[in-house]
Image (cartoon, rainbow, N blue to C red; front, side):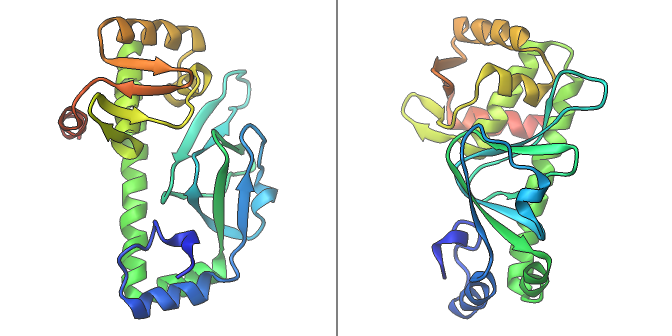
Length: 223
């Protein structure tokens, strides 16, 4: 199978892997430059996007509001819907997407084991979205920041001896858009979380100074 979907379909039987390879051969690969806006027209005909490399977010600015919010995020192997007419996709780092047209998606869904994989990944994405929405119920912004960092660490972090690293760049502005707060509020919350030894920041990347068990345990408690 071509490398472009290896992360999503890892472990498929050889025959099914060959079916996937034949289906996705003609699917466009899109390189996303960090900071550049990608509108719905950038993904013409795509029914689904697969993040092959990097990290992307979908940003929306509700009518009548000056503050944007991030409606979706995805790292390697994640599924993302193309942005709506009111949304814009951005890469937080140099990223690569595979655009799956409707016809190709129908062909993939016709392969039972592949359809099961797609369902599992969509369920995982939906779970992350529900958890992110639930985080808005926290009235204390420091709790929103803490829980969002734990979610990012659980979904995309890398375990090290010192904790869980979040290696892709998450600026204060991006983190604020993820949790519905102002940049200034996020900065104050991060300062407090650093003082209490929960997180260590280096540029726009973070290391959660907790054990992997604590990250997973928090998620279980929140579920």
